[in-house]
Image (cartoon, rainbow, N blue to C red; front, side):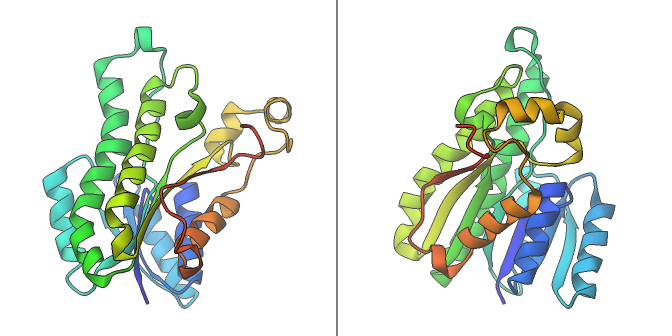
Length: 239
């Protein structure tokens, strides 16, 4: 049984990833910052199905705090699967965007990636097997109006993972990025009416969280051992 850590595990996509990786036989560490109750409930649901999970709460933007938690979490066994799913939106046109809006989004998605990944790597390298998977967005590939901060953070994950894949290839560790398009969540339902989705998406529907989770599951498996440094889109043919 491998240990898998999913940041932002209390959100809809994060929950689906946690459940799928649990079905694959991994012990799941569900990270949350604010929604710890949802993470704890998910851990209970996974345990009720015969899986193994625990919920943890810490601030990804705080390197010292994150490192301390990682040290505690890896005492029993190294974490060999990391899914960095945490991210936030604070949308505004760049001309009207505040420095705080820029910093907040960069801090969670991109600085958070460094803060969570860096202390995991040496223990992971010693096992000579690992999977680092960052959840990006179509905005990180094509950009999006009002989301310069979000697009910058998500595209930065691609550069980080491509570099990481080169650094860790000889240790049996892969690093990849999954870039979803419009996914059927409560947030997307409010932003994208069905008619708008039909105009934007060649497949004429939103993706499902389980479809994203299935892709993550494959990238975290032994079967994906030769896939590294890639940005894999899941967007119904949008780009």
